[in-house]
Every structure is written in structure tokens, then in C-alpha cells.
Image (cartoon, rainbow, N blue to C red; front, side, top):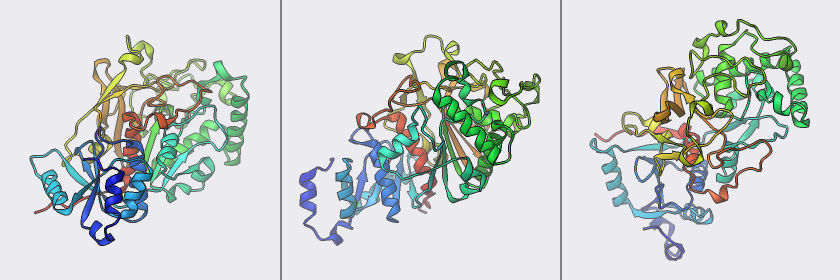
Length: 422
């Protein structure tokens, strides 16, 4: 039973030590009033150095926390549904979850991940789903860009999100539509000055250095999360190291006509055997992205992808990343919308897909000691977001399944597997 304000007033008269005999269950199924803010309060609790048990595959990935009045107050203030259960019931629940016959598990969260968002400091004519949901959920983050990464500032962070960046140095391939717009002209000047500052002749050379440093961050144990064009352009830049794939309007000289043959797919995280889109006026980077021609009959009303159900005890990482109260997720478009499955490396885990049209939307992998997740599309609650449109108001979408997938990735670095009972 979800507790209301009457119960709150009742329990607030009890001494604090009685409350410690109970547990708080924050359900994450359809009984939850605000899924997105629940992640924010989980982060807030971890900041207080109070551990949380993330109950994988139990009621949508619920949270179990020791009962404290300060936590109850915060849940009420943020409009988050919760239940009070006794220690005996909590132990019984954990025993049920630990049973070998149950596809559930308890993951202990006990570390606050330090979060960075890689984004230009200047204003962009588009928003970013990750910064929108971090702000709405009240999860703190730092904005960093090329200066911080080139001076080894990434070492301060556990988790890095890549804003909608074009790591190939082609300015989003917006030339045909936006070359005369003030924001485009200013961005090109800003990026060229940044490349020169760090000793590079071209923006593409600086962006390659950035991608390689980010790969080093992951290799040493960092977590990388990217959406939209920051996913495929990241891998394209790595594969094209030392190869000019940018046309004259982007870097002052023509692209290498043999660029395709010179790609090194061994350098990438997620994709292989892709073909570059060398037309500088085409709003695509390669055939990694499934464009409209590849998605016949797909439109807003029937665009969905399905989350896989993983074994909580044997595959805890993909299980954490797919916790949700829905398994069928509304699709949404972006400059990079979805990934052609035939071009995904065999060791990559597909978390969400539309199998009928052979595309993946949500993928994950391991690199060295670290992890990465790529999520196709721009905004989970805006099907076709255009440059210059206002940002999504998440007050209207507190239970968004698509945004929940982003926040699963935020909590992942806080997890530590609990020891099983013997």
C-alpha cells in the first residue's frame, strides 16, 4: 500500500530509533508517481553515505533503504511514492529475491558517481535529454569540454555523457541547411580556435584526440554514455584516425578519396564494416544509422522497441541498464536514430531492439576495465525534435520509460554486487 500524508503524520510522532526498525521500499512499477525523481532521491541518499539495495526485476527495479525520517521527508517533498515495511518483511523479500528459482537480485548501491557532461560552454540551438533529466531529477553534474579533457580533467569523474557532438569535425553535417546561420558560423569559429589552442591544424584532429582520451578513460574503468550522433561519430572518428574524411567546406581541403579503404575498425567500441557517407551535403555520416528508407512504414504511431529481459543473477549489468516499468518503449528520432544490427560488433550486448526492421536502439559493451552505453535518438518524449525547438518539459513526463533508461546508466557506477547467502 502506498503511504500517504496521513501515515507520514502518524509515524512522525514515533522516536527515530523505532523508524530504524523498518525499511523504506520505493516501488518502481506503475504504482510510482514519479519515476524520474526517484532516481534523484536515490542519488541524494547515496550522497548521505546511506546504502541502497536496488531490487533488480522486482516491481520495475525498486529501491530498498533503511527507514529514516529525513529520507521520508525528502520523498514526500519530491512527490515520490514509497512504502514502509518491517525488517522482517524486508528480510523475507530479500530471501525471495535471492532464491535460485527467482530471476531477481539485490544490487547494493554505496558510491556516489561523479558525473560530467561533455558539451560546448556556448549556447547550442538544441537541448540534450541527459542534461534535461539530470536537472529534473536533481542530480548534480559538471559541464566539461575540450580544455578539461586535453588537460586530463576526466580523471576526476566516474561517468561521462557525450552531448550531441560530431566527433568527425564536420559540424553535424549541417552545412546545407544552416551554413549561413549565426550560431553555425560562431560554432565553427569557436571550434577552430579551440583546435589551434591545443596545437591542431584542424578541428577533426582535435576531436580525434578527444575520442582517444575518452577511450582511455573507459579503458581505465570509466563509464561512457552517449546518445544520438555522439554515438556513431565517436566510432567513425576512431576508425578514421589519420584519414581525412571531411570535405573542403569543413576543414579547408578535400577529403581523401580512398578514405573508406583506410578505416581501421579495430579501434572502435561498437561498430564495424560500416560505409562512410562522403557526400558533404548529405545529413548522414555512414550507414550505421537506420534512416527513413531503412524503416519502411515506421512513423510515430507504430515506432517502438523492445527491451530484453536478462538474468538478474548471471547478467546483472544489462539487467540494471534495462530496469523499467515498461518493456515496450516508444521510439524517437534523432540525427542518429537507430543502429543497423549487421554493423554491430559481436561482443556488444543489445539491450533494446526492433527486430522486425533489424535495428538496435540501445546497446552496451565493455572496454578494458570500463563500460559504455549508446542510446539512439534525441529525446525520448519528443518524437522528431528540430533545431531551435523548445526543450521538453519533464514535469509532463515524470514516468517516462525512455528517460528511465538514461537514469539507469547514472546509477550503474554506484553498484556493488551483494554477497549471496550460503
